[in-house]
Amino acid sequence: MASSEHPGGAEPTAQEAREAWAREAYAVLESTARSYHAVITYKELGTEIQQRTGIHTKALLHNWIGSVLGRVVREAHRRGDPPLTALVVRSDDGMVGDGYREVLEVAGEPPPSDVVEREQHAARARLDCYRHFGATLPPGGGVPALAPRYQAAVDRRRQRTEKPTRVCGTCFMQLPATGICDACG
Image (cartoon, rainbow, N blue to C red; front, side, top):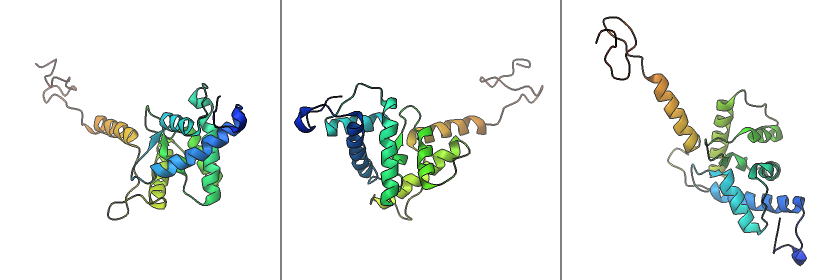
C-alpha cells in the first residue's frame, strides 16, 4: 500500500487503510443510493475508494473488500441507516453474493434459505436505501428490483422454461428447432 495523504508520508497500516476505505465506501454508497435503482460493482467501488483516499493496494479485491464492507454494514446499523452494501453487486452476474449474509447477521435476521431469497432481500434493502437517502422515486414510492444484470439472467431462464415443448401432431415426438419432424418429415 502507498499513500501520499498519510501523516508524514508514511505508509498506512492495513487497518488504517481499511478504515479509510470504509469511510469513503460509505460516502460512495450514500451517493449511489440517491439514484433510484442504481447499483455499483465491487470493482467500481474498490477503484473509487482507492482513488478518493489515495491509498492503493495490489492485493486482489476479494482479499480486502469484504472487511471494508463489513465496516460499512456495522456503521449503517449503528446509524440506523438501511444496509448500503445491498447496492454493491458482482459485475459478472449482478448478485450481492455470499458476503451479504453479514447484513442479516448484524440485523439479527435469519440467513436466507437460498440465493433467490438473498437477492430479493437485497432488492428490498436497496429500495429502503433509495427512500432513505432521497432518490427521486416514481409515483407510488418505487418497487424493489433485482440488479439489472441479475434480472436479465432471471428473465432469460424464465423465457427458456416458459416455452412449451412443441411436438409432432402425427408421432407426438418433440420437434427439433427447425419445427419439422425428423421422423415424419
